[in-house]
Length: 301
Ligand SMILES: C[S@@+](CC[C@H](N)C(=O)[O-])C[C@H]1O[C@@H](n2cnc3c(N)ncnc32)[C@H](O)[C@@H]1O
Image (cartoon, rainbow, N blue to C red; front, side, top):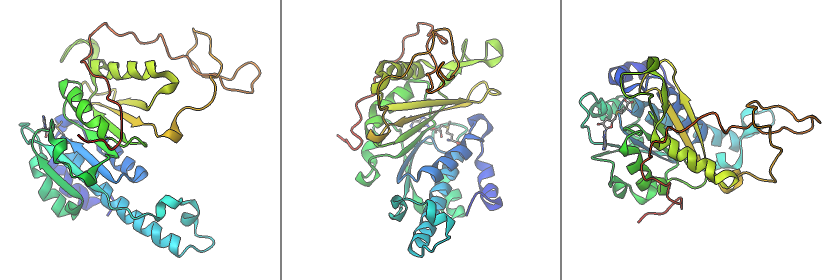
């Protein structure tokens, strides 16, 4: 079942406006269908959990259809023509959800019933408790984690705790972590310049590590910010780069320092790269003592 009227009838009561996941939940749904992760983890449950579970059910159904098309592949089957060998593999995904149900406004407690009403509860394992230390409760089949949605105070110490424990468990070959709310109000909660937001100390630290790693980087990062929100209005996606996705080749031409635009060089044959340094200055804040631990992809102590 795609996201239809019945889905929204069941999901609507779990949508808590102050949680701010009304749009990002659709993004998560689409990402799951695109990436077909086998093992998904959500920390911080509620409205988004329904989209993740439904996405896994829909991706599994689509995978099944693809396998049938490949078996019956006849000339002129447009879908079969674009499928890779990976579409031949059986796809039995699973979502693990961790929440201690302690937030006064959370709808996490209603998730199991709603999943049952949608008929997608068979894809989900709910672990009730604090996320710190809970990776030990994940079965070995859950590792490595292909897709993680962290919606539990990422810009606070929780984000650091999470990264130190869970980052080594993320699949080294393209595993992805999406964080909600990695941006913070510029001059503290409730004040400042009409609600302008900046990367939190933790996000800044991660971006510094990325910049320092240069061409040797083992992950990439994208933040999408909802300009109309003061808080709960951004998602930062960090993806581990598999060996085949790393940067290849010799350094390309540098742009002049002052320019921020991408343009062709004077001969018009190559693209020079945008110069991205110098636009954003850290305020000198001290980031939490986090270094992303080395990623083994499967390691578990
Ligand atoms: C922002 S809400 C999640 C919103 C949800 N993703 C949605 O779309 O509605 C954060 C959730 O994390 C849970 N939580 C907060 N701290 C936690 C912790 N240390 N361990 C586990 N769960 C926690 C809360 O109970 C709450 O349900």
